[in-house]
Length: 391
Image (cartoon, rainbow, N blue to C red):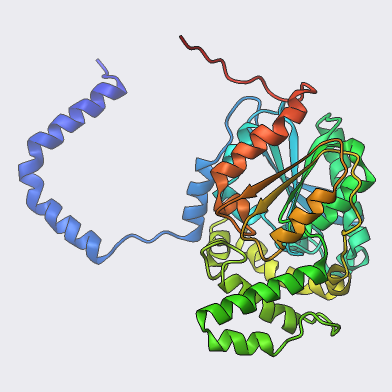
């Protein structure tokens, strides 16, 4: 008679215990050999483990990587959620050309309980850059062109998934596209959510520079002071070249203005290397896409000014890192005070700078669920909540 798997496993365990003394010496030899020659894992091994751990298996869920032809080029979307009845949350990444898809595996999974989350690699970024030639992408490499790309993505999602409205979240550069799109089509959105909101780029550069120089002097860092003073007055009236931007960014980041308590961006760029959504070729395309994109957008990005863009036809939610000097938290808070919208809400994250969703992921999720989700629940655009009982 065949034993069940459980009985087989139990029998095997008993046999191993009984035979342990006989194998003690062999085990010691095996352990010594393993320590001398530890097993190695390839990138493919690691990414397969990560992909399997985050696989969506719920019957009403969705886990898709979709190529959509928009405005003459193929553009890539990652669409993930554990229940299609939940509202869609479209994420507009920063940069320009710094896709968040390669690192979303580090923080996004809990969002997928409450939203169908869409990561989009914009024109010139990541998987989309790798899927097209620069000649094909170039005609739309303007703020207007990329805002229209974003509009087409929203239209695709609304039509394909039968949603009247969705949530629109912009991070950093993505807030430029998000603000413009929310202004143009407020009827499409439950809310516009700005994370690391861009307000006025030249003023932002001035504030970030002052923070970096002040910090350098406080710490007595002669090298930082020398490099920062070499580009003063900043930004002044001189062109905002990549070299000048780079000096400001280098030291502002070093003093925690990008990620609070961190001196560099390695925690994010290292995580990219283990992305289950990206091939090595697509990872290599990120830097190439950044160079290509900034060549086209440099002048228009540095001219962005939303100081007087304060009237919104949809709710506005701002998530602001209290230590954000990459896109100044001060400017974002001042801008929020001037906003006119059906409703508005600002959350100041005490232990975050610019990368709020990675720096305080639990608190970020709580505010997505408590501050944004109810706007969709009122429209019955959400899966049923858990059944709870108590005495």
